[in-house]
Length: 175
Image (cartoon, rainbow, N blue to C red; front, top):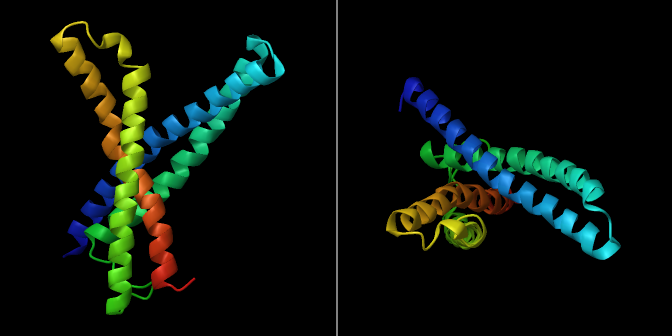
């Protein structure tokens, strides 16, 4: 693979990682913000005009942190996978067969975890945001299901990457 192809792959990986981090981070941040608003109102009886700005600040902070965390992990995994460096250590040398097997097994488990998390996210979107569109005719039902499935791929990449990169580094670099 020449340098031009490597640059092209890295550029594509950055775009995918950015979208994965953005979509998943937005979901995580909104859960944190809404959760805090509900907690403040129900537990402490805080008025909505006071709880709302606090929840928005916490939600934005959650989105920001998750976006950059998941973007970096997604980029690292996509880059290693597409440039055939998944089974190489930080010096670029190959790893033992036992480590390859361990990385492969945990890679499959990380992917399964990403599928489960993405499915839960899709279900949450379907039951809350897309529910008003359901039952309004075939076209609106298809639209609701389509809109709820958009984040599933990006969430899958982000969450699976987060788990996989940590486990991979632990196995290969013996941390």
